[in-house]
Image (tube, rainbow, N blue to C red):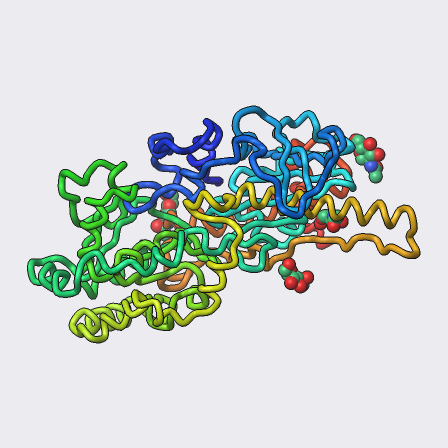
Length: 483
Ligand SMILES: *[C@@H]1O[C@H](CO)[C@@H](O)[C@H](O)[C@H]1NC(C)=O
Ligand SMILES: *[C@@H]1O[C@H](CO)[C@@H](O)[C@H](O)[C@H]1NC(C)=O
Ligand SMILES: *[C@@H]1O[C@H](CO)[C@@H](O)[C@H](O)[C@H]1NC(C)=O
Ligand SMILES: *[C@@H]1O[C@H](CO)[C@@H](O)[C@H](O)[C@H]1NC(C)=O
């Protein structure tokens, strides 16, 4: 099973400055309350070759430039037209999404959008002079192919949420430091008044159920021990006030909606998939509002938090019951609660990795003075390819003096998300007919089959990706015979 992204659709329609969420197929994406689309939405793409990198003195004409081909039909980060010259920090390329150039001598790299990547549609045969580049900023659940070694190793350049990728997008959902520093929208005194008026200490708002992180199973158990107001489709026990019911309000940054959820002391913030460094607005938005996230998702999330006490991490507790005990105590202790908001004072942000990560990234989020990360990655590939071409030429002219360029290949640290596992309890305690059990472990292993099938297609120099199933079948047969 693959999850299609509504975001891609709106990119395809041009500049995503209009609200695009009406285009989202409601049940296929992680949509609904408290879940906007990808950070890419709203991004403005370079419309003309409007700037030239300072180190770029490339004088070649378009006819001489290397070509980068965007393979995913729905994503080409330029508008209008279907090809463009890009003048990057150090060199220039021609970029296009016209698949006719697939086998062209000058086409040096093919760029893929991870969510849309399908092994049975891969550009084959894979030519030895072409590199592959993977852009995957979305959830691991959208395509588990890259979580397996054979899948990710097909790529020479990566941009993923993992810090180890070549062009990391780890903090893509955190627009700026100021976003974190914003004073709490609702004071603790006011939150306490809401508590007395009957509001639960904890908010849950999720409408995409049965996801790989298996979050609802955990929350269901947690709710046995502590009050949770749940407004989304999953584990619903409360209705939104009428004026907030409109889903477009509930998915966006609508201010009425935001002040409604900011009254809660704690927000359950569970990602749809678990993977190191996969963090979304589920984590950063409650912090922006001054609510304490109860977080599950990236196992290494602590590496990026402002200080060691700015979120409650589900992984730190042995059970939902233990977690509930802790939250109850925190709910009754104003001093301890306020410690979790200390990072609202700049000097209490002590995590250098976070500060430097925000400062050093070359792309911006809602920042027109910096490139967006899609065009930024394209340039990263362009400069990398031009460097490789120069080194190859030099090597060809004088192999003794000039070594061949280093091979570059991604590995499991560039994505490598683990097999989905139950969020609570062990697999053998769960009904085998459970929807989650039926869906996600299988999806994960089928993705490995597809990756191995594609590797086999490439090593046999096949031109027809439609032969994928045949290759997967042969691999399974050989395995069955113990070869
Ligand atoms: C790109 O990756 C492929 C597949 O892993 C590898 O065979 C090839 O040598 C790499 N190309 C470069 C230029 O490093
Ligand atoms: C995997 O890739 C990372 C980052 O590109 C690199 O530092 C590391 O050495 C690689 N690991 C292996 C085993 O090749
Ligand atoms: C699972 O579903 C099948 C078919 O609906 C049914 O025959 C079987 O008894 C169910 N198993 C359990 C453990 O509920
Ligand atoms: C792979 O196939 C292509 C076209 O189908 C052909 O031009 C090329 O020579 C083949 N390469 C090898 C190594 O057989």
